[in-house]
Amino acid sequence: MRNKIYAAASLLVLASIALVGQNCTGDQIDSTASIGAKAPDFMLQDQNGKSVSLHDFAGKIVVLEWTNPDCPFVQRQYKEKTMTTLSSRYQDKGVVWLAINSGHSATNDSDKQWAAAQDISYPELNDSSGSTGKAYHATNTPDMFVIATDGTLVYEGAIDNDPDGDKSSDKVNYVQQALDEILSGKPVSTPQTKPYGCSVKYGS
Image 1: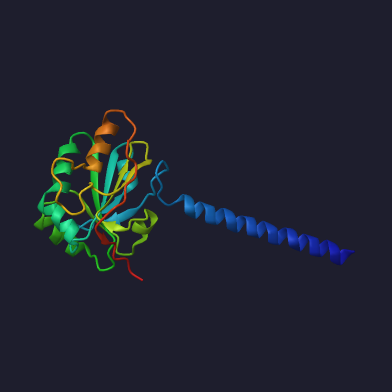
Image 2: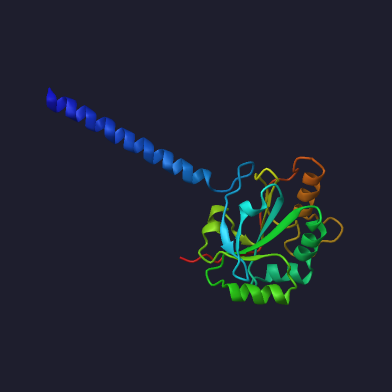
């Protein structure tokens, strides 16, 4: 009888451990990015070695731009000044722009050289470990994320609907559209699109 009691108690302990394991897994999933959920926090160094966290900008609209100076799609956008123009246009409206380089070979120095060459005034954040990129499921460069003032993710995807760079009259910049809607007190009409560009060069 005593052996049966011990066996039952052991089963209860194992079941409890299994439930705890399931809850831990759920917490890990909750800490990754999804539309309508709280955007994962992070702390990364910018091109000058300064630590920058998402929570530094609580109460502000934040745009995250996944970037790679070696990617032709990124180079095209910077040649057309898409990112720098948008950043400047919305800066006075309380919008914060952060670029994140999750390439495994990224360094503060290489990010600094790129920022200087492109006349970039916003932080270029070094995520060479890939932890932030993976938390956001960033797959491409560029891959864009817009975070509302309440900290929720409201847009993820392509910068625009022009992957080949040949559209004119029917070109839509999804980030600009999302920002205009948020600032007008409207919901984001297109919360997610398929990003295009180079793959994020995560380490192994």
